Image (cartoon, rainbow, N blue to C red; front, side):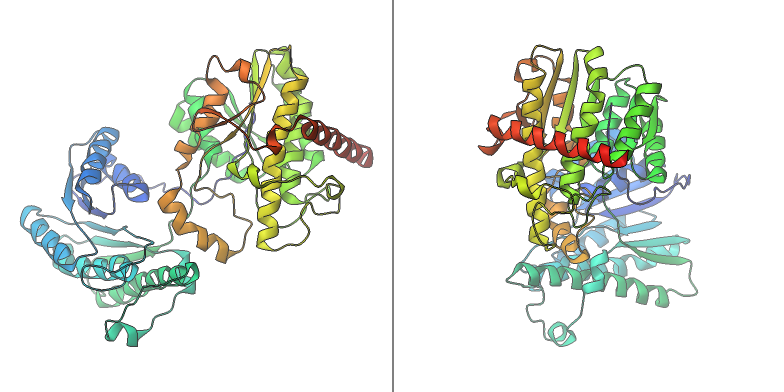
Length: 497
């Protein structure tokens, strides 16, 4: 199978065990906090889930216990938007727990409004609540040293600023009315996290309590989650990726988590037709089978491919178009087989301007953010149309194909956009987007679900058949796109030779 994965950031390789240690993780009923709690519980720590919602906290408690195999996990209510709740939590903790070895101030929000104490919500929760909690528990941390305080900030702190007059007069710090004002306030609270850590370290000099501030980074994407699931099912999985170091790290992770050694890396740069042809040639020489081809890679951003096409058009459509055609005969030999192409809901906003699809031209003129988004929408429409025409051409064979919208996923899709735009999307992503595991489910459905063969060429979302946009159902448009794509990929071969 084909899959493209981008892995950002390193993994913690520490083998430290934490038997006899106690850790508090705030905001641990979801996301990074819950994942952190599971890892620490697996290491033997007693983990305190400090969360505001009792219902979600108790649900997370059962999940962390189940996944870690540890019963030393407890839930304690903590509302960082209430200084009274913070004091109550600290009092309860100090009475009932004899140790505190690590305090992880993980909770963070991106919301307007005020706290119970009248502070701006993000300033109150992201900074003041954690500031008070840390100070109330500092003596216990000193008693159990060596101990640590870990504070989750963000790279958004680079854009933060602090208005001390506003702080001192208890004005509405953190009550933005526009998206940009709200983002600025979030950045301010993340700067407060960094400065708090810096000053805390100074005040703790001479003790064995250390403190650290960090940017947690991003998730690794639905491609890796898809590959992991398929490897767990026993498939031989080919990771077709551009970055060798990151791909080999991903392959190692997948082999370890799936306990399947049949996971290998092959180099593929979808932004280069020469690389696509080289990959296909190597694959066909070395691999006897191809049962599922998953065209997962996607980019959004400025720039051009090695062949002079707009980046989104070249990678998201043309690279996959060429790859699929080069491997089609192998898929037919191994039928029943499937081709799954990851599109997006944004295909509804796409359009096709065929005169602009030539090399050295941009499908959407200009390099503005809006131009990049439009080019991405167009490429997703092409994914849907490509799948539709491919199904028409494969009618009567045992190869079926499907396109899909994976859901709103917090991945590295926008890594090519400006830092400001990545920051703008980050808080929304943490709150509203699926994680990569959730985002991989519709891909897996199209790759594995029995009985959907009669729906070849159709579009899916949320593990169910959905109606594509009107342009995505236009057979004449799909046929024309195929002919243009065929000409563009063929002409590039003539240029290479």
